[in-house]
Image 1 (cartoon, rainbow, N blue to C red):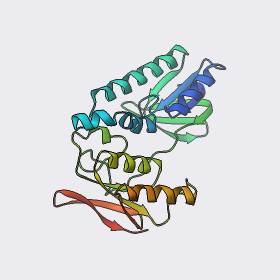
Image 2 (cartoon, one colour):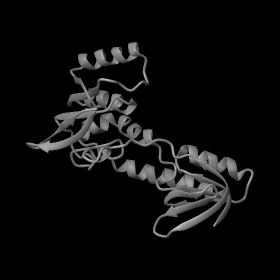
Image 3 (cartoon, one colour):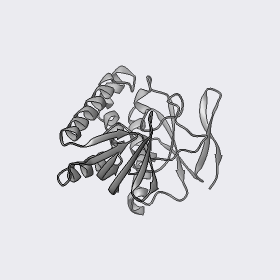
Image 4 (cartoon, rainbow, N blue to C red):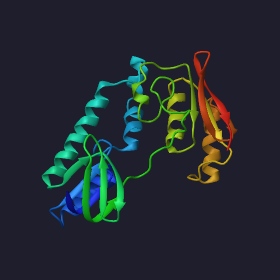
Amino acid sequence: MKADVTIIGGGPAGVEAALSAAEWSKNVILVSNHPIGELKSAYTNMILNHEKDILKYQTFWNPLFEQRKKEWEISLSAKLIEKGIHIVKGTAEFIDQETIRVFSDDEHLIQSNKVIVATGSHPVFPNKMQPDGNRIFSYQNIYKLTFIPSTMLVVGDGPIGYEMVNFFSNLGIKVTWLFPQQPFELYHENIQNYLLDFYIDKGVNIIKGPYVTSVVSKGGACCSKKRRW
């Protein structure tokens, strides 16, 4: 396969890059190993916007979630195809500056004059903390939880961590938050201290310590096994 421009990454940035490139070239390829248009915050937004339904039905699961995700992917894919953009699903790697190998059900080689990398960022989970959708959850599968637990352990102090701590406490869940001694440098110290005091007033148990590296199931519950740098 040959292309004038190849975009690696099918999230919002990759989609916009492909649409922009298609204005200047009729030979654009977009490579993605995730659903087209997948947006990290969309998962949490779906949950946050349905707090009343979750309380009413006592489940995080809402059949509309999957339907809306699929409709979004189909609409964006159709828009890309309408602009003449060829979509290749799989994981890309560079062979050299102009050659990309894509791994999927079939292996593809793409020769491209220009390459735009728009993969964005993704959370990295230690091997012993992989979200299983059963006891360990991430932003991608929390909406599959079919009941409201009495307790919840939150690990991480990124924006989604703050959102989930607040959200779970709003549902009446007893939340323990494992907060790193060296916090994520996104918020000003004054804002961070204000938020921590706010959550403490809401009954959140905040435990500061080293980064969590593993979680185990013990006595029917999950707990951190090791906390180290």
